[in-house]
Length: 314
Image (cartoon, rainbow, N blue to C red; front, side, top):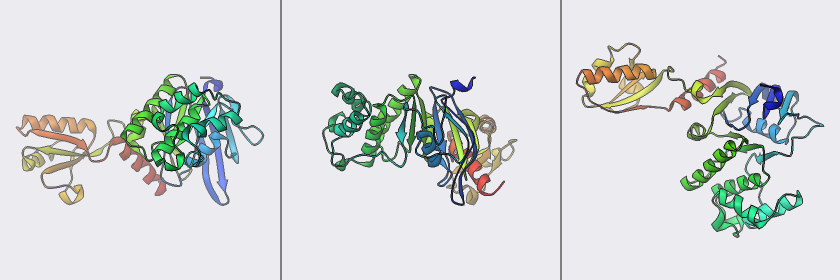
């Protein structure tokens, strides 16, 4: 893949605030038309990286290319980049419609009523288009911020915690809009503390910890089936299930205190393949399996393992 085919390409990207290293030699390559998640604990450098992509800050070292163009002190981010960090900037005394029309008019963008109605509908705010923003919930403000970004017809959309405050209906509108953008070739970069959002939306994810990349790639590689996790099994005979599980290769039965579960639940530490083998052995032994589920979802478990390793210095 040629450099110009990347929506974002960062090499050895570094950013410091005094003695604090916010980004430490970060490398990143994002292809067009993908939804890329950015995850990490507080202070990992996520917001700093998003700010660099939006042109709100300049890196101290390394190279950054956005939509095929170098970005730096004398090289602002391309106009086809849109989004927000630390929440969208809105005018509380104005209506949702005016919040979109006024800034767009100043930028010389399309302010036709039909186009504004279109992006408001895209994020599910048609019914409150003429209400003042001061009465909006956090989730509604997030959706209006997304609508403002959509109005610019971006080729790169950068969003910081876009699911904050969203109810199920709002989340459905936002997720649908982001998927449609990606299908049209727009690259979406979003940060989130919610592993379920990343799992539902993203093709790829980058995990940062203390300013460094701990993982960057497809979700399938992060939450691999051969990664050992704690699994909870509900069976027809818990005592028999524990005896059977103790004899299955690759399965470690956790003590009740260690598992933190009620006595009727069997909790084991094993890979996905080992759990499948355990279920087959239990059924063969006449123990009915009513439920099998990871104690912590695979993506969240991988995230915790990577970030904890970084904090421990390993």
